[in-house]
Image (cartoon, rainbow, N blue to C red; front, side):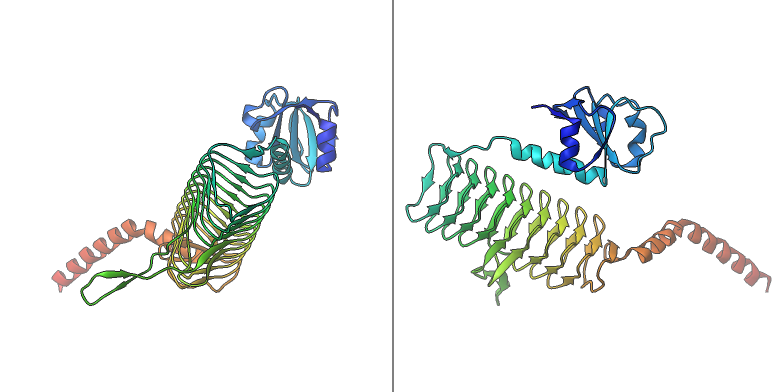
Length: 346
Protein backbone atom coordinates (compact mmCIF):
# COMPACT_ATOMS: atom_id res chain seq x y z
CA UNK A 1 0.00 0.00 0.00
CA UNK A 2 1.41 3.38 -1.03
CA UNK A 3 0.92 6.80 0.55
CA UNK A 4 2.04 10.24 -0.55
CA UNK A 5 3.77 12.80 1.61
CA UNK A 6 0.63 14.92 1.28
CA UNK A 7 -1.57 12.16 2.72
CA UNK A 8 0.82 11.52 5.60
CA UNK A 9 1.11 15.22 6.38
CA UNK A 10 -2.70 15.45 6.52
CA UNK A 11 -2.84 12.63 9.08
CA UNK A 12 -0.11 14.21 11.21
CA UNK A 13 -1.16 17.82 10.65
CA UNK A 14 2.39 18.48 9.48
CA UNK A 15 4.02 20.86 7.03
CA UNK A 16 5.65 19.60 3.83
CA UNK A 17 9.12 20.71 2.81
CA UNK A 18 9.72 19.21 -0.65
CA UNK A 19 7.68 17.10 -3.05
CA UNK A 20 4.11 16.53 -1.74
CA UNK A 21 3.66 13.67 -4.22
CA UNK A 22 6.64 11.63 -2.95
CA UNK A 23 5.41 8.08 -2.32
CA UNK A 24 6.28 5.62 0.44
CA UNK A 25 5.26 2.00 1.01
CA UNK A 26 7.43 0.92 3.94
CA UNK A 27 9.26 2.15 7.06
CA UNK A 28 13.01 2.33 7.68
CA UNK A 29 15.45 3.60 10.30
CA UNK A 30 17.12 6.79 9.19
CA UNK A 31 20.52 5.11 8.95
CA UNK A 32 19.06 2.36 6.72
CA UNK A 33 16.64 4.32 4.53
CA UNK A 34 15.90 3.25 0.97
CA UNK A 35 13.82 4.70 -1.85
CA UNK A 36 10.11 4.39 -1.09
CA UNK A 37 10.65 4.29 2.68
CA UNK A 38 9.45 6.61 5.43
CA UNK A 39 11.93 7.50 8.21
CA UNK A 40 12.08 9.94 11.10
CA UNK A 41 14.66 12.03 12.94
CA UNK A 42 13.86 12.68 16.61
CA UNK A 43 17.29 12.45 18.26
CA UNK A 44 19.79 15.04 17.02
CA UNK A 45 22.71 12.64 17.53
CA UNK A 46 21.48 10.83 14.40
CA UNK A 47 21.42 14.02 12.32
CA UNK A 48 24.43 12.99 10.23
CA UNK A 49 22.37 10.18 8.65
CA UNK A 50 19.68 12.48 7.29
CA UNK A 51 22.09 13.94 4.71
CA UNK A 52 22.90 10.54 3.20
CA UNK A 53 19.52 8.89 3.83
CA UNK A 54 17.82 7.48 0.72
CA UNK A 55 14.31 7.42 2.22
CA UNK A 56 11.71 9.25 0.14
CA UNK A 57 10.06 10.98 3.12
CA UNK A 58 11.48 11.88 6.53
CA UNK A 59 9.54 13.19 9.52
CA UNK A 60 11.38 15.87 11.52
CA UNK A 61 10.63 18.34 14.31
CA UNK A 62 9.32 21.73 13.21
CA UNK A 63 12.41 23.56 14.44
CA UNK A 64 14.92 21.28 12.64
CA UNK A 65 17.40 23.35 10.58
CA UNK A 66 19.46 21.28 8.14
CA UNK A 67 23.15 22.10 7.72
CA UNK A 68 23.34 20.51 4.25
CA UNK A 69 21.06 19.63 1.35
CA UNK A 70 18.63 16.77 1.96
CA UNK A 71 17.33 14.58 -0.87
CA UNK A 72 14.15 13.48 0.89
CA UNK A 73 10.86 15.31 1.30
CA UNK A 74 10.50 16.50 4.91
CA UNK A 75 7.32 16.54 6.97
CA UNK A 76 7.66 18.95 9.88
CA UNK A 77 5.64 18.17 13.01
CA UNK A 78 5.59 19.18 16.67
CA UNK A 79 7.20 15.90 17.76
CA UNK A 80 8.78 13.58 15.21
CA UNK A 81 8.92 10.67 17.64
CA UNK A 82 5.23 10.89 18.59
CA UNK A 83 4.21 11.40 14.94
CA UNK A 84 6.12 8.32 13.78
CA UNK A 85 4.60 6.26 16.61
CA UNK A 86 1.15 7.42 15.52
CA UNK A 87 1.80 6.29 11.94
CA UNK A 88 3.07 2.89 13.06
CA UNK A 89 -0.07 2.45 15.15
CA UNK A 90 -2.34 3.34 12.22
CA UNK A 91 -0.35 1.02 9.95
CA UNK A 92 -0.81 -1.80 12.44
CA UNK A 93 -4.55 -1.14 12.65
CA UNK A 94 -4.85 -1.38 8.85
CA UNK A 95 -3.55 -4.94 8.78
CA UNK A 96 -6.37 -7.45 8.33
CA UNK A 97 -7.36 -9.18 11.56
CA UNK A 98 -8.19 -12.88 11.66
CA UNK A 99 -11.80 -13.73 12.46
CA UNK A 100 -13.35 -17.12 13.17
CA UNK A 101 -12.38 -20.31 14.93
CA UNK A 102 -9.70 -22.82 14.08
CA UNK A 103 -9.94 -26.49 15.00
CA UNK A 104 -9.81 -28.00 17.48
CA UNK A 105 -10.92 -25.62 20.25
CA UNK A 106 -12.40 -26.50 23.64
CA UNK A 107 -15.07 -24.08 24.90
CA UNK A 108 -17.39 -24.82 27.80
CA UNK A 109 -21.05 -24.36 26.87
CA UNK A 110 -21.65 -22.07 29.84
CA UNK A 111 -19.20 -19.43 28.57
CA UNK A 112 -20.25 -16.40 26.54
CA UNK A 113 -18.13 -15.09 23.63
CA UNK A 114 -18.80 -11.81 21.78
CA UNK A 115 -18.96 -11.30 18.02
CA UNK A 116 -16.03 -11.04 15.59
CA UNK A 117 -13.84 -13.26 17.75
CA UNK A 118 -10.71 -15.09 16.64
CA UNK A 119 -9.97 -18.32 18.48
CA UNK A 120 -6.88 -20.23 17.42
CA UNK A 121 -6.27 -23.95 17.50
CA UNK A 122 -6.09 -25.71 20.87
CA UNK A 123 -7.53 -22.78 22.82
CA UNK A 124 -9.36 -23.90 25.96
CA UNK A 125 -12.01 -21.73 27.65
CA UNK A 126 -13.44 -22.78 31.03
CA UNK A 127 -16.83 -22.50 32.69
CA UNK A 128 -18.92 -19.33 32.94
CA UNK A 129 -16.26 -17.16 31.33
CA UNK A 130 -17.35 -13.97 29.58
CA UNK A 131 -15.38 -12.70 26.57
CA UNK A 132 -16.15 -9.42 24.78
CA UNK A 133 -16.35 -8.65 21.08
CA UNK A 134 -13.37 -8.39 18.68
CA UNK A 135 -11.22 -10.49 21.02
CA UNK A 136 -8.33 -12.54 19.61
CA UNK A 137 -7.16 -15.66 21.44
CA UNK A 138 -4.23 -17.23 19.61
CA UNK A 139 -3.18 -20.88 19.64
CA UNK A 140 -2.78 -22.74 22.93
CA UNK A 141 -4.23 -19.97 25.09
CA UNK A 142 -5.80 -21.35 28.27
CA UNK A 143 -8.63 -19.36 29.87
CA UNK A 144 -9.90 -20.60 33.24
CA UNK A 145 -13.35 -20.55 34.82
CA UNK A 146 -15.23 -17.34 35.66
CA UNK A 147 -12.77 -15.15 33.73
CA UNK A 148 -13.83 -11.80 32.22
CA UNK A 149 -12.11 -10.40 29.11
CA UNK A 150 -13.10 -7.01 27.65
CA UNK A 151 -13.61 -5.93 24.05
CA UNK A 152 -10.74 -5.64 21.54
CA UNK A 153 -8.26 -7.56 23.66
CA UNK A 154 -5.54 -9.72 22.10
CA UNK A 155 -3.90 -12.66 23.86
CA UNK A 156 -0.99 -14.31 22.05
CA UNK A 157 -0.04 -18.03 22.00
CA UNK A 158 0.73 -20.13 25.07
CA UNK A 159 -0.65 -17.61 27.57
CA UNK A 160 -2.59 -18.80 30.62
CA UNK A 161 -5.31 -16.85 32.43
CA UNK A 162 -6.25 -18.55 35.71
CA UNK A 163 -9.73 -18.79 37.23
CA UNK A 164 -11.51 -15.62 38.26
CA UNK A 165 -9.15 -13.08 36.69
CA UNK A 166 -10.44 -9.96 34.95
CA UNK A 167 -8.88 -8.49 31.79
CA UNK A 168 -10.02 -5.08 30.51
CA UNK A 169 -10.57 -3.66 27.03
CA UNK A 170 -7.83 -3.06 24.44
CA UNK A 171 -5.38 -5.17 26.44
CA UNK A 172 -2.47 -6.99 24.78
CA UNK A 173 -0.82 -9.97 26.47
CA UNK A 174 2.16 -11.50 24.68
CA UNK A 175 3.18 -15.14 24.44
CA UNK A 176 4.03 -17.23 27.45
CA UNK A 177 2.68 -14.93 30.16
CA UNK A 178 0.80 -16.30 33.16
CA UNK A 179 -1.93 -14.23 34.80
CA UNK A 180 -3.28 -15.39 38.16
CA UNK A 181 -0.88 -18.13 39.30
CA UNK A 182 -0.72 -18.55 43.08
CA UNK A 183 1.11 -15.90 45.06
CA UNK A 184 4.22 -16.99 46.95
CA UNK A 185 2.50 -17.56 50.27
CA UNK A 186 3.89 -20.07 52.78
CA UNK A 187 3.88 -20.16 56.59
CA UNK A 188 6.62 -21.94 58.60
CA UNK A 189 5.42 -24.48 61.15
CA UNK A 190 6.98 -25.84 64.35
CA UNK A 191 8.91 -28.48 62.40
CA UNK A 192 10.60 -25.89 60.19
CA UNK A 193 8.50 -26.86 57.22
CA UNK A 194 6.37 -24.53 55.12
CA UNK A 195 2.63 -24.83 54.88
CA UNK A 196 1.00 -23.35 51.81
CA UNK A 197 -1.34 -20.39 52.37
CA UNK A 198 -4.28 -20.70 49.95
CA UNK A 199 -4.38 -17.83 47.46
CA UNK A 200 -8.08 -17.06 47.03
CA UNK A 201 -7.92 -13.63 45.33
CA UNK A 202 -7.55 -12.77 41.66
CA UNK A 203 -5.75 -10.48 39.19
CA UNK A 204 -7.41 -7.43 37.65
CA UNK A 205 -5.87 -5.98 34.48
CA UNK A 206 -7.52 -2.67 33.54
CA UNK A 207 -7.96 -1.16 30.06
CA UNK A 208 -5.18 -0.47 27.53
CA UNK A 209 -2.51 -2.43 29.39
CA UNK A 210 0.25 -4.18 27.43
CA UNK A 211 2.05 -7.13 29.00
CA UNK A 212 5.21 -8.50 27.37
CA UNK A 213 6.15 -12.14 26.87
CA UNK A 214 6.90 -14.49 29.76
CA UNK A 215 5.58 -12.24 32.50
CA UNK A 216 4.03 -13.63 35.67
CA UNK A 217 1.38 -11.72 37.62
CA UNK A 218 0.32 -13.59 40.76
CA UNK A 219 -3.18 -13.67 42.17
CA UNK A 220 -3.81 -12.00 45.50
CA UNK A 221 -3.92 -13.94 48.74
CA UNK A 222 -7.22 -12.11 49.32
CA UNK A 223 -8.66 -9.30 47.22
CA UNK A 224 -6.91 -8.44 43.94
CA UNK A 225 -3.52 -7.88 42.39
CA UNK A 226 -4.22 -4.81 40.23
CA UNK A 227 -2.54 -3.46 37.10
CA UNK A 228 -4.16 -0.09 36.42
CA UNK A 229 -5.16 1.51 33.13
CA UNK A 230 -2.43 2.23 30.59
CA UNK A 231 0.39 0.30 32.30
CA UNK A 232 3.09 -1.09 29.97
CA UNK A 233 5.14 -4.10 31.06
CA UNK A 234 8.21 -5.37 29.22
CA UNK A 235 9.18 -9.06 28.97
CA UNK A 236 10.20 -11.30 31.93
CA UNK A 237 8.58 -9.34 34.77
CA UNK A 238 7.40 -10.83 38.08
CA UNK A 239 4.58 -9.10 39.94
CA UNK A 240 3.71 -10.73 43.24
CA UNK A 241 0.44 -11.14 45.12
CA UNK A 242 -1.57 -8.05 46.12
CA UNK A 243 0.72 -5.63 44.24
CA UNK A 244 -0.94 -2.57 42.74
CA UNK A 245 0.60 -0.68 39.80
CA UNK A 246 -0.75 2.80 39.08
CA UNK A 247 -2.00 4.27 35.81
CA UNK A 248 0.45 4.66 32.91
CA UNK A 249 3.46 3.29 34.75
CA UNK A 250 6.08 1.60 32.54
CA UNK A 251 8.37 -1.20 33.72
CA UNK A 252 11.34 -2.59 31.77
CA UNK A 253 12.44 -6.22 31.53
CA UNK A 254 13.49 -8.53 34.37
CA UNK A 255 12.00 -6.50 37.20
CA UNK A 256 10.58 -8.13 40.31
CA UNK A 257 8.03 -6.55 42.64
CA UNK A 258 7.38 -8.31 45.94
CA UNK A 259 4.00 -8.79 47.59
CA UNK A 260 1.62 -6.02 48.69
CA UNK A 261 3.75 -3.18 47.29
CA UNK A 262 1.93 -0.21 45.78
CA UNK A 263 3.50 1.54 42.77
CA UNK A 264 2.14 5.00 41.91
CA UNK A 265 0.98 6.31 38.57
CA UNK A 266 3.28 7.59 35.79
CA UNK A 267 6.36 5.86 37.24
CA UNK A 268 9.26 4.67 35.06
CA UNK A 269 11.16 1.62 36.29
CA UNK A 270 14.34 0.47 34.52
CA UNK A 271 15.42 -3.09 33.81
CA UNK A 272 16.39 -5.55 36.55
CA UNK A 273 14.99 -3.42 39.36
CA UNK A 274 14.03 -5.29 42.52
CA UNK A 275 11.40 -3.85 44.87
CA UNK A 276 10.73 -5.32 48.33
CA UNK A 277 7.26 -6.03 49.63
CA UNK A 278 4.83 -3.96 51.68
CA UNK A 279 6.16 -0.55 50.60
CA UNK A 280 4.78 2.35 48.55
CA UNK A 281 6.38 4.16 45.60
CA UNK A 282 5.02 7.68 44.98
CA UNK A 283 3.61 8.96 41.69
CA UNK A 284 6.04 9.90 38.92
CA UNK A 285 9.09 8.22 40.49
CA UNK A 286 11.89 7.11 38.14
CA UNK A 287 14.11 4.17 39.17
CA UNK A 288 17.37 3.48 37.33
CA UNK A 289 18.19 0.00 36.02
CA UNK A 290 19.53 -2.62 38.47
CA UNK A 291 18.45 -0.61 41.50
CA UNK A 292 17.14 -2.20 44.69
CA UNK A 293 14.26 -0.43 46.42
CA UNK A 294 14.17 -1.40 50.10
CA UNK A 295 11.96 1.30 51.61
CA UNK A 296 8.95 3.48 50.82
CA UNK A 297 9.55 6.39 48.44
CA UNK A 298 7.33 9.32 49.44
CA UNK A 299 8.74 12.09 47.24
CA UNK A 300 6.81 12.33 43.96
CA UNK A 301 8.74 12.69 40.67
CA UNK A 302 12.05 11.85 42.37
CA UNK A 303 14.80 9.76 40.74
CA UNK A 304 16.44 6.82 42.54
CA UNK A 305 19.49 4.71 41.79
CA UNK A 306 21.70 2.11 43.45
CA UNK A 307 21.24 -0.96 45.62
CA UNK A 308 20.02 -0.14 48.17
CA UNK A 309 18.78 2.85 46.18
CA UNK A 310 18.79 6.49 47.19
CA UNK A 311 18.13 9.77 45.40
CA UNK A 312 20.17 10.11 42.26
CA UNK A 313 21.99 13.34 43.21
CA UNK A 314 23.29 11.69 46.39
CA UNK A 315 24.07 8.50 44.48
CA UNK A 316 26.24 10.40 42.00
CA UNK A 317 28.14 12.14 44.80
CA UNK A 318 28.72 8.79 46.48
CA UNK A 319 29.84 7.24 43.19
CA UNK A 320 32.51 9.91 42.79
CA UNK A 321 33.76 9.08 46.30
CA UNK A 322 33.71 5.36 45.52
CA UNK A 323 35.77 5.85 42.37
CA UNK A 324 38.29 7.86 44.35
CA UNK A 325 38.74 5.17 47.01
CA UNK A 326 42.03 3.82 45.54
CA UNK A 327 43.54 7.34 45.62
CA UNK A 328 42.22 7.92 49.12
CA UNK A 329 43.70 4.60 50.27
CA UNK A 330 47.06 5.52 48.74
CA UNK A 331 47.02 8.87 50.50
CA UNK A 332 46.19 7.20 53.82
CA UNK A 333 49.10 4.80 53.41
CA UNK A 334 51.46 7.70 52.73
CA UNK A 335 50.14 9.58 55.76
CA UNK A 336 50.63 6.50 57.93
CA UNK A 337 54.24 6.27 56.73
CA UNK A 338 54.84 9.95 57.51
CA UNK A 339 53.29 9.58 60.96
CA UNK A 340 55.42 6.50 61.60
CA UNK A 341 58.59 8.41 60.64
CA UNK A 342 57.67 11.29 62.94
CA UNK A 343 57.02 8.87 65.79
CA UNK A 344 60.50 7.32 65.36
CA UNK A 345 62.16 10.75 65.45
CA UNK A 346 60.53 11.48 68.81
